[in-house]
Image 1 (cartoon, rainbow, N blue to C red):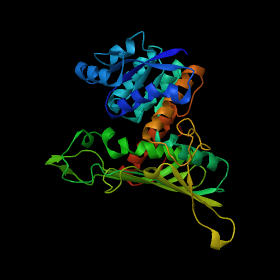
Image 2: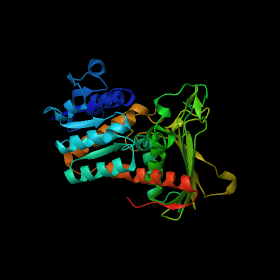
Image 3: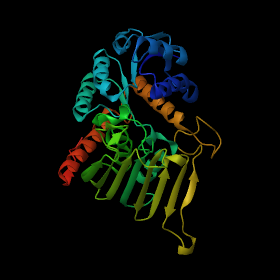
Image 4: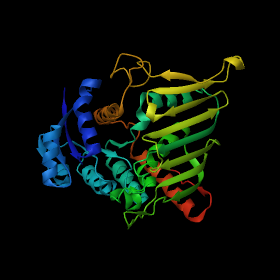
Length: 367
């Protein structure tokens, strides 16, 4: 099997997930390209060396520039803070190396536009890390909607809610400063991308964005805790999206409910291996939501487990992404979601901030 040298930028929470995924993907999916963990770089040479030893990389880089420039690094995975994404991606693409970038694509709409321009000018494979939309359950929902399983869709409600800053006594940390680190920059991209993937483009929206806890430990917070959007999809369907990092009790509230003329679908990431499907058929007395447990009949489940209902987990989503990135490199054909999907998401979020500022409905520019 041919190998490909992987360079990883960032070794923390997501860096570890991508390192584990690249180490496992060949065995799980029998990929024609086999990743070689070549070099990792983090915030300092010391942390780079620590991650090298922990994750099994061959070498540690002094900084991201050394990784991108190294001849044995043939593809780059960006898992560093969003304020660094643009510079790393542009340098890697200029060096002729495919790039996988964690969400959000950049720290701003301008970053996202520049990264798409660089990627498309290079002609190289590029992907963005919207992992939750790749669960077997949500892939199944996407396919079912495309096949008309619940008829014409009339309504979509989506949320991404967590509670890691719900307690107002939690001291201010890096998440409390800069728009890119706020709830709209950090959490909303996942559910906005989900809405676009399941429902298609958003034509217009009206949004509210707010900071719930203005100070923490006597320090003023300068970004948002929660936001919401009323939306009209290009299809004509109505919708509502809500995002919060102060939703007490919610740990991974990536959830949606979809209504159609022939049925409805519900999903909640906290129960990621189940889809609830309602079909408007048969006698009224026998109707109700059916809980469908994912299994080998659902997309990308079988490579992990042969048993229905046994379930997949968070790390498996990242392994699926690694398979797709390797496939894009091997075939030279784009694999969804690319940087352009990251740009589409960024445009919705930028429009939401504009709407929140003036209180009006705004059209969303086409991606």
